[in-house]
Amino acid sequence: VSGFVQQCIAGAWREGRGLERFAVHDPATGEVAASYAGASEDDVDAAAASAAQGFADWSSTPAWTRGLVLLRVGELLRAGRDRFARLISAEQGKPLAESLAEVARAADFFTWAGGEAPRLADRIVPSRDAAELVAASQPMGVVCLLTPWNYPLILIAKKVSAALAAGCACVLKPSEETPGVAVALVQACQDAGVPPNALNLLLGEPAMISRRLIAHPVVRKVSFTGSVPVGRLLAEQAACALKPITLELGGHAPVIVCDDAPVEAVAAALCARKFHNAGQACIAPSRIFVAAPVFDRFLSAFTAAAQSVRLGPGLEPATGMGPLANPRRLAAMESFVDDALRRGGEITAGGRRRTGPGWFFEPTVVARPAPDARLMTEEPFGPIAAVVPFNRLDDAVAQANALPYGLAAYAFAEDPAVQQRLARGLEAGLVGVNDLPGHLPEYPLGGWKESGLGVEGGAEAIESYRIRKLIARAPTART
Ligand code: NAD
Image 1 (cartoon, rainbow, N blue to C red):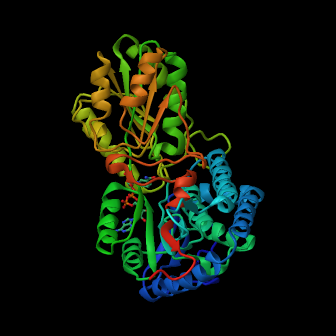
Image 2 (cartoon, protein in one colour; image 1 turned 180 degrees about the horizontal axis):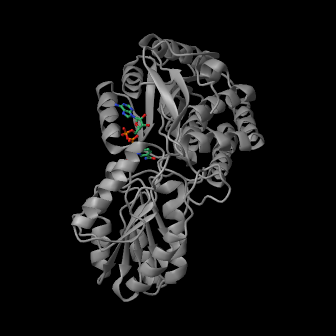
Image 3 (cartoon, helix red, strand yellow; image 1 turned 180 degrees about the vertical axis):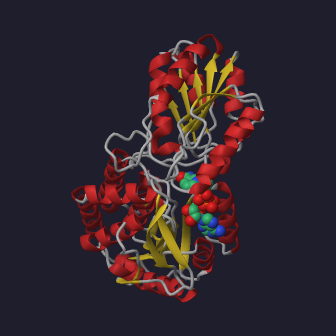
């Protein structure tokens, strides 16, 4: 992370004028890598005012031109992939190969949004007489985008690409813990031709910045990715201001492995996905229900795969799993393990933090935790998986659906009737059957129940930054 961690208002890069300073840490050592001053209340107001001006400019830019600019952002991300990836690994901790994949996926979101922008169209409604009726859609206005630290580039790319494609102007507040890659992205957007006041960047205290932005009269929509409790708080603030909010919140993805599935291959695939980003992913598989006849086989294959994941700093080429992004996750993992052990679970892999510097926690497998263990009811958001046997498929589905989360769910079965039943019966916004799909830009993904509101990705996401207007035009004044 360079020393250059500054906010950007109307194209002017400068330190925030708030009183508090924030530190950016290297999770592999725990040491401070950079520090910066956070935004003041006046900075927030200045960013909102800049975005109001930016909206006037950007919304009147032809959609075709907006699309070309977004395509260029995608190209700049690809051209600078090594620099972006190193920034991600340095401040978030994940292995460089995962950071490179994150840059590539973020670029795809801009490329896809750039292609979609010129396709936005009004709808002509057949009229009963000579009047013309148009169900038009227009960009909403200034939008407030709030993003977390686990995928510090791609989660910004999803929101910014859709909002800019729609013609909105943005005030972006990334995680206070991973600001470096957000700075680099905003620079790339400016280099690609996004007007500086159409994308403003605020850094610092999340509660103050989001509360003030949500209440600000020029802000018309809010989009947040993060935890359920913070999502609930922001939804209350948006409700008070009567503003729409898109929420992408937590998950605790269940997996059902049936007895006809290729058990060893499924165990290997689940291990790779589970420990990707050290498990700090909202769609990570985390409660694995396995048919009793194949439970032992699955557990031993999954345990062996977890034990073979190589823990190390993200910037070392041999690393399979990096450190956790912050010490809060480390403490949370220890508490999940202690609680699961007290409630009858057996640790078959990992279970401890690594001694020495950095925020490392071993890839961990807990067999047969009790149904009321916290690991079975609360999102772990870290490198711990629970593996539990089931006798009846209906019981597994009931347990899978029992939590208030509903973001992702997975099922492995060869029998087509069982595949169909699980595809339709699992309560989640994304169900992978014999598949562990990632989020691609071309399809909409959103959580059910407490996992979210609205979707990101797909034409639907761009539409969510636009507002409907019915235009009725008669040839002469009707009297
Ligand atoms: P947290 O709830 O404190 O913070 C989550 C995010 O919300 C951070 O990026 C932070 O900047 C922001 N935030 C915190 N307090 C806020 C406030 N009062 N107003 C506005 N924004 C605020 O939790 P954490 O310790 O950073 O992360 C742990 C939990 O967050 C995990 O258990 C996981 O459930 C969730 N999380 C989910 C995602 C996701 O992709 N859905 C991403 C990151 C974290």
